[in-house]
Length: 414
Image (cartoon, rainbow, N blue to C red; front, side, top):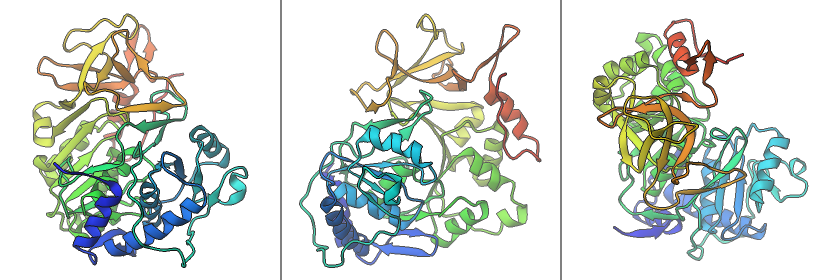
C-alpha cells in the first residue's frame, strides 16, 4: 500500500483527470484542476496570514465548495483544520478559538475575534499569488473537530493520524473515483471525515447546502451517487415523504447507505431495509475518538434487532460504572473501549474517562450479548432513576417517534 501526503493525493488526482468534477454543492461545482489551482493560491494567502505546519485553523463556513477549498489549503500548509458550526455565537466560538490557539479563523468578520487573524466568508486571495504546487508538508494531525458529547463541555478531539492518505484504500465501502453524497453539516465529525476521504480518493463529492429530504433524493439521482451518509433524523424525514415523491427518484446507483451518530428507531430501520434492501443499509457505532468501531449490515440487523453490530476495530467491554467490574453478557452497564494500536486522539479542553486498567468510556450505556453483538441503551448522563428503576430516554423517544405526527422528541428527567 502506498502512502502519500494529502497534498500529493490531490495533485495526483488532478493530474489523472483534471476536468473531472471534484465537488458540487447546490449549483456550484469545481473540477479537480480548479480545486488544485485555487487551493494552491489560497494556501499561499493563508501562509501570509500566519498559518504554518502544526497550527490549528478554525473553519466556520457553511456547506459549500468554499468550505473544502479552505480545508484543502490548510492541509497543504501542514496545518490542522478545526471545523466549527458557522452558526455558533461569537462568544462560544471564541472559547474554541482560544483553546486551539488558532492561527487563523476562516468565515467570520474581523470584529468577531479582534485579537485573532480572520478572513470572511467568500474571501478571495490576491490573484497575483502563484497557483503552482507548494512544498510537500504533512500535518501532524489531519483534523481536530469539536465535541461536547462525552464530557458535556466543548473540547477539541485531535486526531492522532497525520495528514497522509493510503492510496486506493478509501474504506467504509467508498469507491475510488466514485460519487459520494453528504447531505449533513460538515462541522460534524462524520460528514467531515467521510467527505474528506471521498476527496482523497478521487470521488465526486456531492454536498447539500443544508439538509432537505427531497433534495437529497434529487442529488442521488442527478449525480448517480453510489455512497451516502445519513443520520436517523434525516432517514425519518425522507421516510415521511409521500410515497409518490419517494418513488419518483431512481436510487439504484446507491451501493452503500450509511447511518450513524444517533440511535435509529427499529421501525425506521426496518422500513429502510424493506424499501432499499437490507444489504445496502449499513450502520456504524463509534466516537470521534475512534478507539473502537462496530458495524452491522441491514440484513444482519434483522436477525439481531436493535444491535449496532460487532467490533470490527478495537475492543469493547461492559463495566459497572461505579466498581469498574466487568459485567456478564446481556447485562446493561457502561461501555468501555480500547484501540489496541495506541492513542487514536488527544483531547484539548477535557480529560478522558478511563478505567483503572486503561479502557476508555464515551459515556454510553449498553450490553454485549454472547455472540459479541453490541446493544446501546442510552447515555450515562441521561439515564433517569424513578422508583428504583432505570429509564432510558432514548427508548422512550424511539417509541414516541413511531407516531406519524411526531417529527422529533426529547425526554428529560425532572
